[in-house]
Amino acid sequence: MNDHNNIQNEIAVALDIGTTKVCAIAGRLNEYGKIEIISVGTVKSEGVSRGVVSNIDKTVRAIKEAIEIAERNAGLKFKLVHVGIAGQHIKSLHHHGVRVRHDANDEISYDDVEMLVKDMHKLVLPPGDKILHVIPQEFTVDDERDIIDPVGMSGIRLEANFHIITGQISASRNIMRCVEKADLEVADVTLEPIASAASILSYEEKEAGVALVDIGGGTTDITIFKDGIIRHTAVIPFGGNAVTKDIREGCTVMMDQAERLKVKFGSAMANEIYDNRIITIPGFKGREHKEISEKNLARIIQARVEEIFDYVLWEIRRSGYENKLIAGIVLTGGGSLLKHINLLAEYHTGLGARVGKPVEHLAHGYSIQLASPIYATAVGLLKNTIENMKDRQFVESVTTEEDRLDFAGVEQEVEDHDNHDNIQEEMQERKKRGSRFFDRFYTLTKEFFEATPDSEF
Image (cartoon, rainbow, N blue to C red):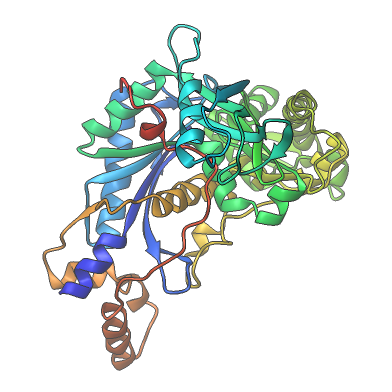
């Protein structure tokens, strides 16, 4: 029983509230430092538009359904969740901070750096905006520049450049309100592009210079890394739903038909379509079927995706890192599932591109469902949650032996086994697993509630 309680205390829960889906995911670290997924609950999202809550009741209902599915699969009751925030209201800016110390002989401490960060929260922002993250760039100690970590050095004048991410207070409040109405507490809030980067990008890519382009349903999020530090963030108010609407208008079909056309036959490059099949679309009752060639469908899609990449290239140039992205572009999110989209990204931007899947940090045996760019944000949120749990308990006690077996993740696997004895042995082995220790990675972002001690949410 004590081993079970230890395991229970290790579990973290994250909630991705997106434009197209709401995903609840629970997991913990195994003995090898990999994330073991306990359960996932995903439902269609109808109350979110371009990353922002537009209907409280529909969003609350979707959160409850996703949480219930995840709880049922895990045999647990969740009480605390780590939530992602995104949307076209997200903005970023750069600011320079200076702190003059009293004694040049004293070493610079973490407190000195923390005071410099807190000074950034005194910035005057447009009405209705609030700082979400303050991300240090390079430091300067007296006349020595480009210092990554000044702690332990000596000097009078400590300076730093900061990348500051802001969002609308009302948008954040609505997310918090939806979670609370679903009978849950919010542990932390993280910008979703930062979460996606945590699950998709490697350390080498962040060092070399890379632009992560997360093409979601309502928005496309851009996060640029160089020397392991976030250098630029931006949100483009176009995503996969814009492509679907273009298909609806271009093919004069219903929205759900347009979505199916995009998913099943869609391609981001018309020149890569060689057989040019004719697609038949059922008409309304009493009306004839419609037909569209696969190449014409690709032309509709390509036009909108090229527009998205125009914005991406503009943001990359605006960041000043256009010629410094050695690792090129990494595409993720549901929109990256379009065929040939990596080729179009390369042709349109001149940078190498790949499609990223959030599997690098997952333990073996994860569901094939999670090996999709769609779950990049959810897995990244869970990863950040596990790294910053601080002894908080995200789940409540399980009460029955059946629930414990469900929690161990065996119930689903039982259906795939024929040998009853092997199943029983596997159940016993999983129940014996105890608590594990994992060296936490260094994270560049400040936690939401620590960074905003005067939070109004």
